[in-house]
Length: 211
Image 1 (tube, one colour):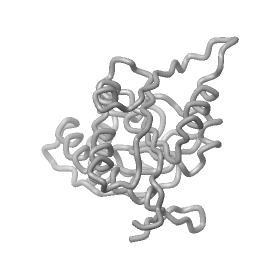
Image 2: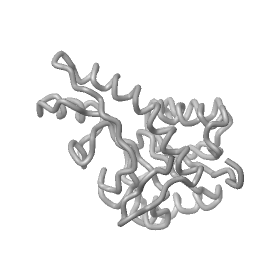
Image 3: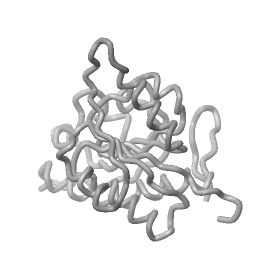
Image 4: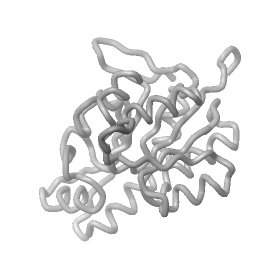
């Protein structure tokens, strides 16, 4: 889009980083007007860190255990995000709570994706396989990913986009997770693209995406 400057994106990931890779692919193909300048992880051995280094993306490993006399995780994160400087923070399977100070400094600039239709099946303890097991146990007929802005509460911030995925009678947690993840890889890049193209607007504290 003309007149839109490239946005600096920082990605936070703790594991395989498949959404990180999907977003990076969209960036490299020119579909998202941005650049991923930083990967933050709490797990130095995860696939996301390996992928970042293979693609010459700076990787920062953060210790979320605050030792007295040292900078807090919030202070460390604020410093490295400001150094980028980050326009957008994307959580892609990041398993730590973002410090309140960072959430406040980057209000409405931190996105997360959750593998269920929030506000159901979200909150502390609802991650990975547990989410899909809970969906199936509930008898819900629909599931699917949710992209939302991050606030100080797990899986609570304003919802930006969702896609429904049918829950089949024969589904296991694994089969449902696989179908939802496939949709995540489409939805998350679209949400990041909308942010970078400045197509998100707010009405009554609810975000919407302009076509």
